[in-house]
Image (cartoon, rainbow, N blue to C red; front, side):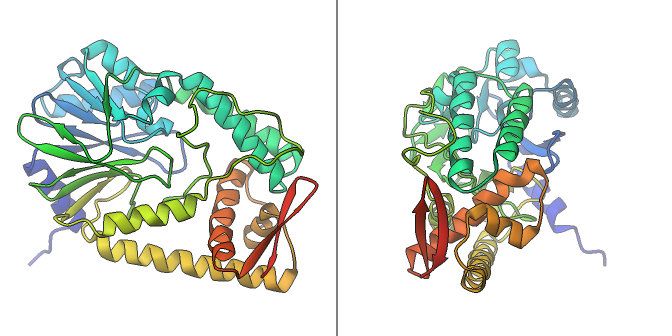
Length: 351
């Protein structure tokens, strides 16, 4: 007897509950992004895909496969601030007249997207300078970030959501949970009656969600970051991995979760087991970095990243920097590593 593919069975279960997965192509290494059509009143789309003709054409064909058009949409929900998830929102809202819902903290960021991206780039450049990334790599990374902007666009949030509130449709209630870490605005939506969570990038089955060091949304989301790259007063740096692990603990403790529909790849059918594996993964990575610092002596986060992965592609330099800093934060927190500052540059040494 042939055993059904678990991913196919999980998506079929979601479809039976009126939630349809529609993968949309992106230009990024992660591959396709999963958008979700909720067959309810109003007809609801969770995330949109990037701002491109290819993505829009794919989305239109996916909607047509369900007997729907862009113009039928009544509500568009944004899970978080990354451009593969929100790039088409403004176009879709303009064509359909749909409301746009997002976490209240995210609304000003999305509405002032270009200014927010400028501030994010300035913040990232300061982080890179402080943690040892050379000038040429920093400038190249800022150029890459600016070249990606065409895949995103500003949008007006007409329905801001507060953490813990309910997003009410005709036939269901979606509980809104703020789960920062991968980004400051990560939001998941729990259909408690069906036991289904729309989890976006908070929990991905085939890859650990990278907690990127990002400018906090609690600061004014459209203010430019002060200063440039070099010395001076250090920029505030959120401990993104610690924040993410705390969010994972909150998700692990949730009751009535049978299925997590991820923003990329296959659904998650055992979120507790996957979260426990993520905890073990991050503990192993932190220990590996501790041993490297103990063996090689004080080093910047960039130097540690090079020791771990060699000369990575420029486009991955900020991702690897975030990876190292997240795990170093865990080590500093329990006293196994100490932070040393010299002339505006931070190095980490054995505790």
